[in-house]
Picture 1 (cartoon, rainbow, N blue to C red):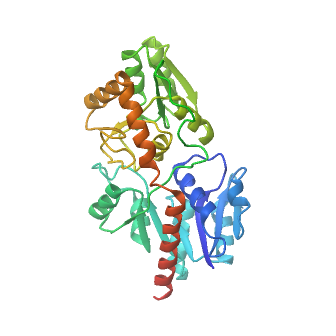
Picture 2: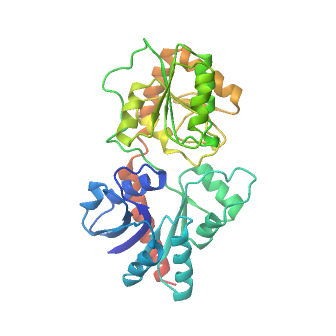
Picture 3: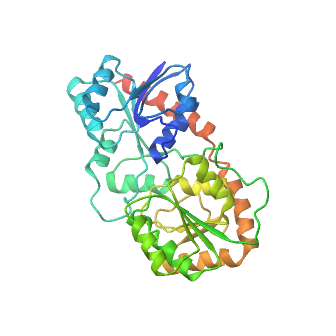
Length: 351
């Protein structure tokens, strides 16, 4: 039995990218081979809470680092999976060094920005440096980890939760076109470009799912441009987002700072063609086949216009997107994680 601790949350309603990944992997890890410890704040995913050999540690409003680490040291795990960059992680790495713990670190890099010239965050650099094994969720990100951090990294893709993201039961109607954006409303997501395009296409409905610091700016912009065709949906659960994706005709994602966003795969699994930026080289979109990847804003807007004006094209691309998404199957991905966990424990034990 291999014991795995992860500073990730098992909450059913949590849609954070790291937590979504860990929940899907945790729900599928063999309970005969792996004992799991995760965190939770609210109601945990039933697939995890009902899983044998699973421990859930409640995350309180304060005092979590000493409390969690005390429990950690009572039963030192074989693996620390998916370290973050917070106080708990910093304390763990310090204890591992001081106490010479045999716990292996499996680092998973999903954050964007390595393709920019800004300095690399110290926490990310530490996670990669200290990792006994390092993985990323895309080939391009793996290349960047090698180029900027000097560390070879394997690739473990994320999947899409098939409970919520799947093709529409009936064909989409071409009578009315709907464009969907989903993401946190932060500056780098560039939701303001969604409003700009709504002003350009008043006959098309634009729906914005998410909350964030730029929400009021987007609302004010929509009002100033008289965009009555913009609907703000607030934050959506995975179930609600899947429903919105099946209602929409086009997924428009102008963000310029990403790792390998799961939302693009969720759109593909929902048979939704996507228009996104190519700066982070997403593999969930096959340019010209399942959607478009733009090199600049002018091209981004041109490709959106192409899908708006050609319903047959977006239908064909949506069908191709659904087929493409099938290769990112969580069951296959989890077996790959199981192999990685077994190998890293064996290597560390042999030191």
